[in-house]
Image 1 (spheres, one colour):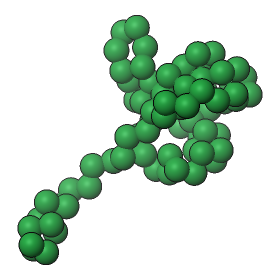
Image 2 (image 1 turned 90 degrees about the vertical axis):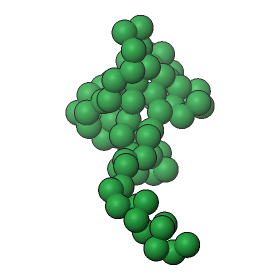
Image 3 (image 1 turned 90 degrees about the horizontal axis):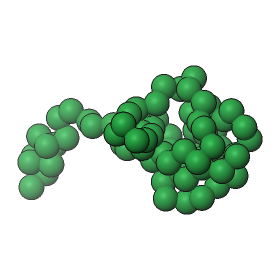
Length: 74
């Protein structure tokens, strides 16, 4: 099966889950994995399987308090 992961076309085994995707692509880490579809964009859960032609990308989680940290350094 082929899917677009963070802008790169990759071959994956049929039924690859988000959890397996994290193992195969360590750069995804603990980021939220989003899927683009006809109905818009939705976050995927770890147990959800990708479909043929899926377009997904990872989005880093928002860290609370980071603005205060940057302000104190400046």
